[in-house]
Length: 234
Length: 47
Image (cartoon, rainbow over the protein chains, first blue to last red):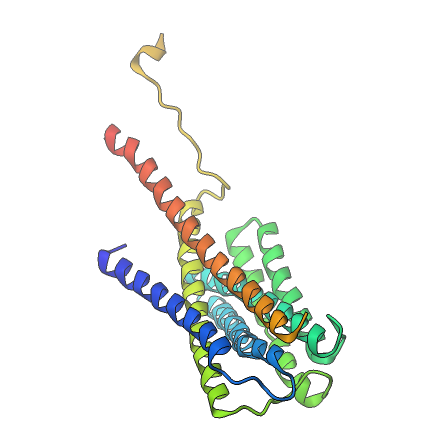
């Protein structure tokens, strides 16, 4: 990695960290408390941007899967699995923050409402994506199966999004926000999006190194060649 | 627990998971680079 690239990456992560910390400070110190739900509504400023970024990460996996089927380049498979890993992490956070909010607002951690159920299905689909991959030994076959699976799994994303509109339930459809609240939401969205992009890029870079190490060998660990000294022959 | 406690818990869990994952990626990258550097050492001596 060049020195300039390294400096740019360090700068990117420092800006993201600073913006994330600033966004949390703004949520708790400056944003007004919502009248109906009270302080627990502050979870919304993190819950919604992370939910949107989950969809974006799933979309990247979908695009990369289509790209792989089209071009059969390893780059697309590496990108697909990297964004799928980030999607699982983000979806886990969406479910957890939603459960915390639900316990405070509805008095229970979980309810089988359409949106919550489709969100759980989305999480399970992408967890299965990551579980299935290592069980396929051939690199090409693994990439091919993952690409087809990545396209099919994405079908749940529109279901999660539309479920609340088509099947109204306990999950709120929209919340009236004051201008300060909208600004806070925008700030949180920008910081979470920067973090998501950074995580996918970092995961992708690491995956490329891992792929390069295993390329052509199909071995879990590099083989060690014994070094013999001149005196060992006798 | 009141509403603020729930909100603080949600933000703490989120920050820990997101930045914990970012930290683990950074550490793995660092370790892999160090392994590469260690592997490169003896080979360059032998050549």
